[in-house]
Amino acid sequence: MHPATLTAPKSFYLASAECFPPTFSIRYLNANSASQTIDTLIPPSTTMCANYRPSSREALAALPLPPPDFAYEEAYPGSVVPIVTNFAPRLWVPAAFGLIPSWAKDTKIVRSTYNARAETVGEKPSFRSAWQRGQLCIIPSEVLYEPCYETGKAVRWAIRRADGKPMGIAGLWERKLDDTDQPTWSMTMLTINADYHPLMRRFHKPEDEKRTVVILPDDAWGDWLRTKSENTARALLRGFDVSGFVTEAAPR
Image 1 (cartoon, rainbow, N blue to C red):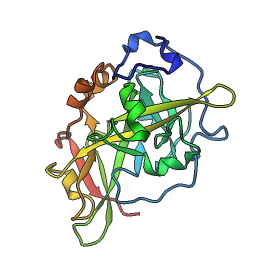
Image 2 (image 1 turned 30 degrees about the vertical axis):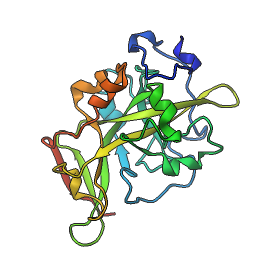
Image 3 (image 1 turned 90 degrees about the vertical axis):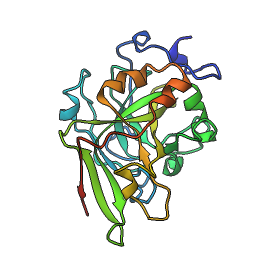
Image 4 (image 1 turned 180 degrees about the vertical axis):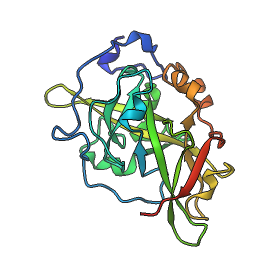
């Protein structure tokens, strides 16, 4: 079945990256500017992860892909950001931060779909189809922002790689055709429990469950996009090695 049809069997599947064409037509979610949001920006919340800075075009130019040809900024749910998908593994495409399932009536759903719990991703209506179809993506991030309560109040902290290279976050994508049959994209970040993670357990309220996005090792980016089974995908959803990462307070 050709991937452009966006139909799939009910079981988890993924075609090889080599099956896809090198280019195809893309339109921004917002025709005026890819850096504009779908809806009103949402302020940071205690939900993991609602605020990050995508990797710069200069940083992404060092990877074996043409850099994004659209503008983007610090991201909140609804922002347009670059992702690379297993549907178009040779392109950075502009996607909404927050998955928009095919049945969604409007884009406001991004306020609750920017994260997907790995434990229930195959059950929740918003994510079930993308997961079962194996619609995997990587979201490049320069900085993650999380609230730390170690001082007794929320202080925004920044998490980044010490070498400044992109963090590749595991995610799911969705793609819809607009009224002119041009594709628009959206994504969500997959999260796992972090109660015992040496770094990510420091963030969010003391009484809250600790969560973390999945930061893929550099040598696992291709493995993630080429994954062909649910079991293989789940095996890659694990906490990241904290060596090589730095954190610091980053209040506004």
